[in-house]
Image 1 (tube, rainbow, N blue to C red):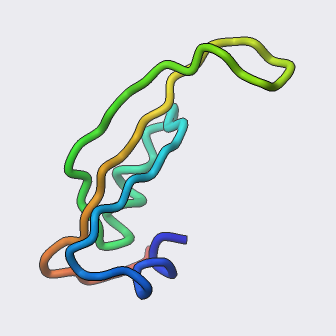
Image 2 (image 1 turned 60 degrees about the vertical axis):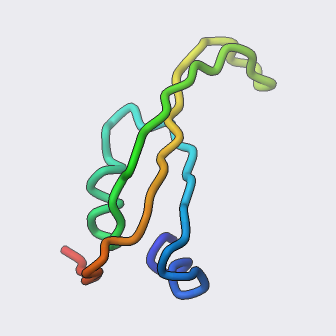
Length: 74
């Protein structure tokens, strides 16, 4: 999704992605997409509209393109 979206964004854009990254996959996803994570904001999710009322945390990733962006896949 990120690689396909980048062709519609300017080179100096700021990208904010909200995810429940309990497995720590997004730094690798950002790297494979040619992005760097500038900052991570952690926030708790306390009130959910779903039946499951368990609290969890989500992360807001502030990303930008790498200056020498070379997209690769493995």
